[in-house]
Image 1 (cartoon, rainbow, N blue to C red):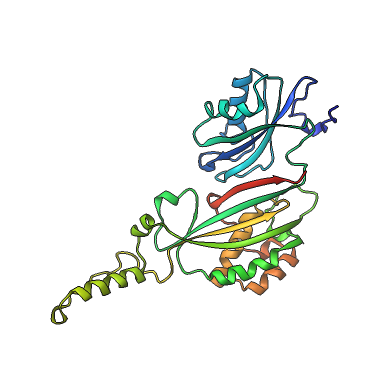
Image 2: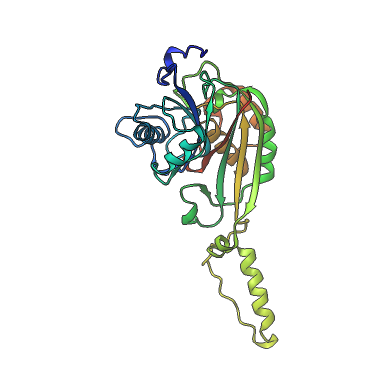
Length: 310
């Protein structure tokens, strides 16, 4: 027998003969006003409702696990809905992907217990925040990374990560206006990963070191008495830092409004030398939003995974 659904969750319709279906949803959030349904705005939730209603002939409204902001992406957000349709649970993903825009793709559809609620079950959420760190931006990364010029001290950023681990009151990392009962959250892991850009990306903007290597090769081919100077000028910006993608990866039991983006912005300030790694613990303890760094842009953030523990 199904448990009663709380009054606030009547958006999930429940019938004696119905089923509850879970969807794992990936999307490019660039052209959407976030997840949550809004009047006169295109949202992920709105597109899912529309496609499901057309597919089943029922008035379907999904409930999502994470209500991501405008411009934020996801590899595995979770949504559930109730239906009396006879479509096999695993077939919803195939049918929906034929009806949804190309920037929203269902990765999985499965039947779950009738009382399963995606925001009320214990879980671990993993987010990643990507930073493109080089001399010039690259158009291919414009919607999925935060572009930063200048050398970042990655070792200092990694040192600062340690202060976030464990259970803390993260009021310093919560945007104003959040409606939550508590600002205490637990961070299980936080790391800064570094990846070199691909050869194709690097060719679009070489670093000074690469240019100097080419100069040496050019000079080696020239006669000693007639060396030709390679004119590098400022064509490539002459940046003296690596061309790289930095990924801030964080896993926790839940996150406050803009929490991951504020943590990312704070770590960037550490990397720039504006905040010392040892100051981060005091920023957390202050429970004062004004003490933390800025909120990093939405486009660099993606929800990677939601892992349910029951």
